[in-house]
Picture 1 (cartoon, rainbow, N blue to C red):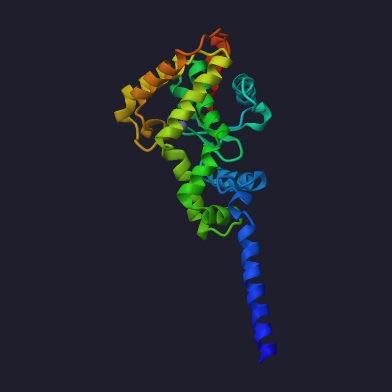
Picture 2 (cartoon, protein in one colour):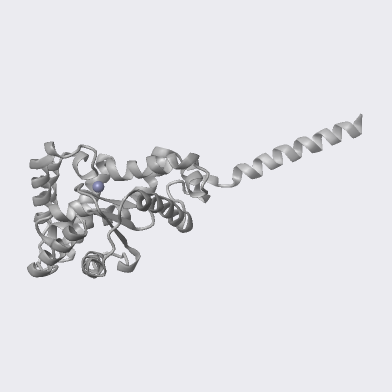
Length: 268
Ligand SMILES: [Zn+2]
């Protein structure tokens, strides 16, 4: 009896001992659920990019790439972000859209370039998407809206028949972030632009023109369906700009810009 009691006591001690030890491990801080880690983020981006490239036409043109390098260098120079780390993907689509993907990937649609009237407008949109990347909005949003397990399943290729990947791509390409994240991205974009010698007025102009054309656009584009609405965004971009003084420098020449737009049009 005494032996049985001491065995039971031993088992109980072991059980509670293990329970106590496990409770001491800070699982949530050990794995920050807002972040996936570099390798997983890259794997997630690859899965999504594969889907995108299978379902839409990419435009690959050395001249366009060389112009994009100028834009990338310009907006990244004023941040802690290395220009080479930013991966741009140009897609053939008449939609006026651009969106960020995990692992510093940015997708730009040819329709957006067509809609931009100045190189500074394009730089403005790129700065906004770069801001989403800098603030890690994309991955944290995917984890929040799809769930950590689903995101990990996508990475490991366990998601059912690519349906989840399809939904994830649709989410990041066609619906806005929450209002506070959009405001944060606009505010950061203004900072990036000012520090890059680009007047944020161009980004505001873009919003104004978009607001005028909105009814004729499909509503399911990130740049159209965003909250606060586009007119209000133009005003708040100008409000943020008031805090800075800008020394403006040209991004690319007028001639280069019209060649660039012409080449995008031809490739589309
Ligand atoms: Zn945004």
